[in-house]
Image (cartoon, rainbow, N blue to C red; front, side, top):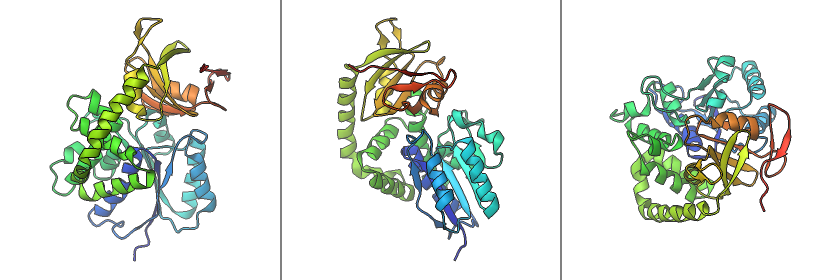
Length: 343
């Protein structure tokens, strides 16, 4: 019986669930790995809406954990510097090994603060491809990007799974003409969100174990969902409105489904006031907000951090409204204001 006990934390989206489960699959398949008979505790999945971070989840673990944990992995989401420092102290005292695998530019600064533990990479230097958490896991644990392992007899199956998730999460399926997966990546994400969360995790586990061919049985559902998505986005675009934030113009709408696809479609709308493409889009879900942009001179990771207590990538980020729906807090000026008034 192995004495290795692993605790994982991750985001709730396709890349979050995928990277958390991929960590276990890769570690268990590494030659002569100490993890082959390890105990993997249930993953704590975190939706960054409570205070905008996963901090409460990590702090709760530090305060209440009674399991003999030997390793901690955090994927696709990063705690605050203060909480990472507490995690580091906790692990040092108990001789627990810990690692963060992430790809969000807003978290890159943690690499310098916690070297050896923080593995946060936005893009791969060798291939030039954008990273997702799944590809960071493959690169750090196996040594290669998923695309470099497609034909590998040992890692090929997992590599294809890791990259289809990367193609969706980084939006390569739409923006990179050379992406290995295009519509199939979007279809996987849509199918993932078709189910409740427990079923999503089960689906991802089966795909990890059996490969992408496992999804073939859902072909009819995927086709129907594609038609439903197109109809939904077309309807929502008709209700788009426009506003200003700092020196930016944006389009916004409330959207409970297909936030990424809807946001990208809205980010290409023409602003009737400026007669130019908007700087970015907002899809609002309660207090949560999803930001998307197509312009190269707009950095949503900065906007999300400054106004929405969030973060992410240059062209895709997320966050929450301050105190109540539609209010923001400007971290640079300290001012609170209502961003939008919905009539």
